[in-house]
Amino acid sequence: MKKLLAALAAFAFSVSVAFAQALPPPTIAAKSWLLLDATSGQVLASQDPTMRIEPASLVKIMTAYLAFSAIKEKRLDPQQMVNVSVRAWKVDASSSKMFIDPATPVKVIDLLYGLIVQSGNDAAVALAEAVSGTEDAFVVLMNREAERMGLKNTHFANSHGLPSPENYSTAQDLSILASHIVNDHPDYYKIYSTKDFTYNKIKQPNRNRLLWLDPTVDGMKTGHTAAAGYCLISTAKRPNGSGDRRLISVVLGTVSDQVRAQESQKLLNWGFQNFDTVKLYAKGQPVATPEVWKGSQNQVKIGFTQDIYVTVPKGVADKMKPVLERKDPLVAPVAQNSKVGIMKMMVDGKPLTELPVVALEQINEASIFGRAWDSMRLWMK
Image 1 (cartoon, rainbow, N blue to C red):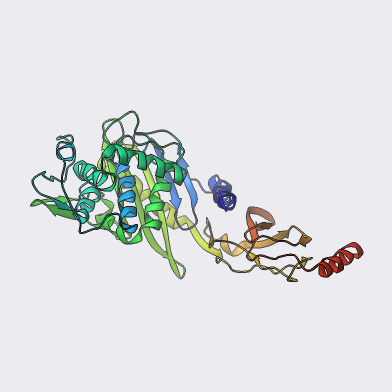
Image 2: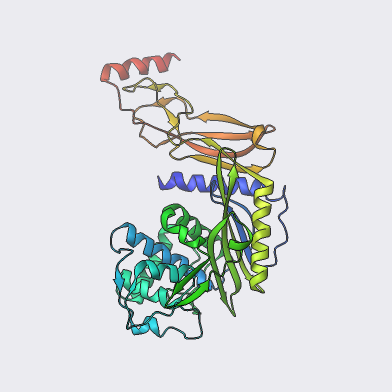
């Protein structure tokens, strides 16, 4: 299964490369940036996506992800009261804070709003301690989760993103992390669209300007330090055919709050205006039923283990034609999810990309007589 997922990831990358030069992206005033179609998993455009950067408060996306996971796994409850440690209370006084106090326990759900909307560094530490006991133990969990997600150029040193040589990431890795929080925790992801939050009688606005400028934007997170510059991961969902399509932009190292919002909006608009995302096949949908030799069944259903989407420049979708190439003859046993061929998507007679096609069911060997009969048929074929 891991090999299949890797193959599908390579498919998304190959389509991105195929159109990278055909449709020049806008000029973006940032050190590093990337635009991801979260529906298809394709990178539509990027500049220095693997450049190592200081992520600043974008670290808090992983903190939120692990807190959401703890709630999902019943290790944490949104209404649970958390005691505030001195460490959480004393986090850098000059940095963004929720203003929690050791004298007053706080609900987990309030900490989540303080983390996401107010970008509270104190809320980050309090959540880390609620999940793992100590922030140090939580950081181990953060790095373990980064490895599981395949964030190859990311490392975390703390839960909040205050400067440390051991806090680093890339636009590419941050786009993967952002897509995980949208897809894995849709219920709690909604917090990212909240425009302001009041705690301890202090009302603070969400720093993501696009929440006010673009009604299709529903998140995600800002970040800023002197070294990192002004950073913004933003995501928008707009109509696409009979459904919706989501784009995620990562813009890192701009010169101001205004510029990071402006460049993110430019990138999102470019992606929506110039590309379409189409669903090619549904998970488990048979694309063919080829003959099987020496098997308990004469045919096997073949297709894909997940919904297959592709993002292409506008006007290209209607030109795509599928061409199936199989590994014939198929001889039993045939394992479920084993690769049995490839589906080539052709445009104007040229291959756009290739998709791995797998067996959707297990086909066992036939009886000794059935195998003997098919052996003779194969010999005569």
